[in-house]
Image (cartoon, rainbow, N blue to C red; front, side, top):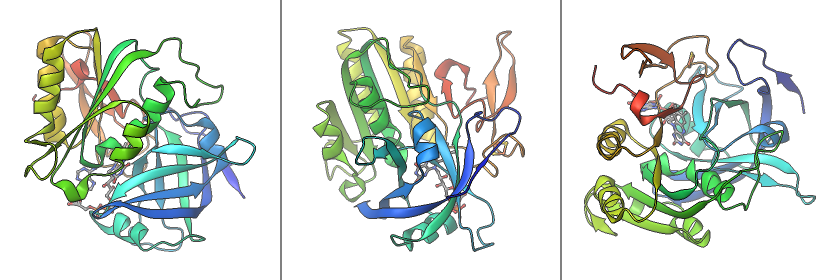
Length: 294
Ligand SMILES: Cc1cc2nc3c(=O)[nH]c(=O)nc-3n(C[C@H](O)[C@H](O)[C@H](O)COP(=O)(O)OP(=O)(O)OC[C@H]3O[C@@H](n4cnc5c(N)ncnc54)[C@H](O)[C@@H]3O)c2cc1C
Ligand code: FES
């Protein structure tokens, strides 16, 4: 397998670009799939919350790669990282193309990219996930519970959350993905649906409010989902002064800092804001740094 080391300013220094073979591809929910790619070089390096870009090697439409977050790595029979998994929902050209791929097909992939979530916090970790925004959190949970180690050199957490609560909201029951996989990790999983077809009838922010109101241990919060949902969660955690990190899903063209298509407004130490590239400085930012409303 040919791996090209990517050497670009600001890029994760271990990033590689390579062809990767699809080794598993199965439905997770309505229009939602999990794909497993054989690519040990990325699997050995990647941290929870980091992402990679994928493009089709033999097509010019779509021309550009698309970003996808790590769902988890998988290991070979010797326990060594063998590849990466991601979950995706079909929304357009690239995800429509991915849906048609079968085991044995190949994609071009480059990564790991971005910063990822911080090493696990202590106390009660609350995770707020909207739609396909839940996929970065399986690796977060497994690392936090000491069930899997990521990165090279391995990132060994120095502390462990006393509790993990996943608040997971989707449009309706048909879009619920991997709920049992998260429950199998032994964490508290709370569900909301916009139409009330499963769990709480309402938004995921209602679940977050309930968990924060219980307030039994020090809380930190990780969040990923559509921008309106993250904006709402951000308001809640800033009002409650809870240390929080949000993973932005800003559209990207290159993924490695060269095109500036992914910039977002980030608050500076002097109170003003400036643009930062989500693919390099993010996608994970402290909630109090993100300027949703200028
Ligand atoms: C760091 C990062 C990690 C991501 N991880 C995942 C993941 O794990 N799984 C997953 O399913 N998706 C993920 N996304 C979003 C994913 O990259 C987009 O859904 C994908 O680019 C859509 O490509 P497409 O060619 O299928 O759609 P396109 O044909 O490019 O677009 C289809 C429609 O979706 C809209 N759109 C495209 N991208 C976005 C976006 N990021 N936000 C809002 N609207 C958008 C377009 O405006 C258009 O209306 C992630 C995004 C980022 C930045
Ligand atoms: S996607 Fe090109 S700079 Fe971020």
